[in-house]
Amino acid sequence: MARIIQQQVIVNNGGCFRMEAPKADERPRALRQKEKKKTRKMDSSIKILRPEVDRLEKAAAAEEAEVARKRTKAKELLKAIKEKEEEKDKEGKTGALVFRSKENEMDME
Image 1 (cartoon, rainbow, N blue to C red):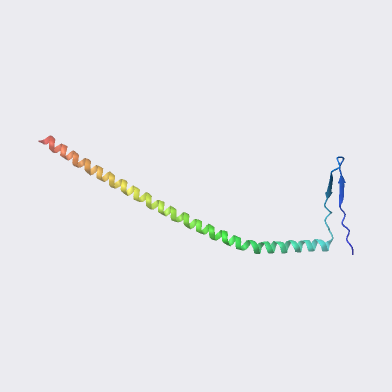
Image 2 (tube, helix red, strand yellow; image 1 turned 45 degrees about the horizontal axis):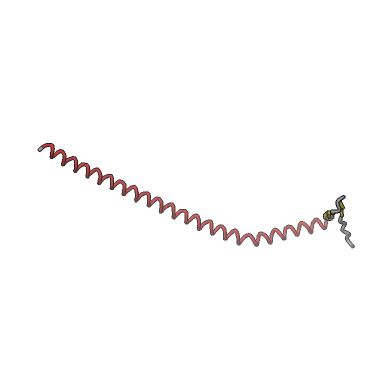
């Protein structure tokens, strides 16, 4: 059985032409074959994309681990900064107390 595919060629007034694609084959067997082809194509694309998805998931997990490490490091640094500020405040207060006690001793004399 020979299949004839018709294409339409439309010529505009300016001499330009446009070719239109042939109409789709809508016979039942052709539609089934087309559906099978779609599923084969989808299956092959899934097989191709699965390793890519795995690679991206591993990369995302590594990035999340890196972010978690950076957050803990930042928390540790903030804690150390607060401790040093508290030490400076304590030293400043004790220094001020010593200075005031010396002033009080001088006033008493």
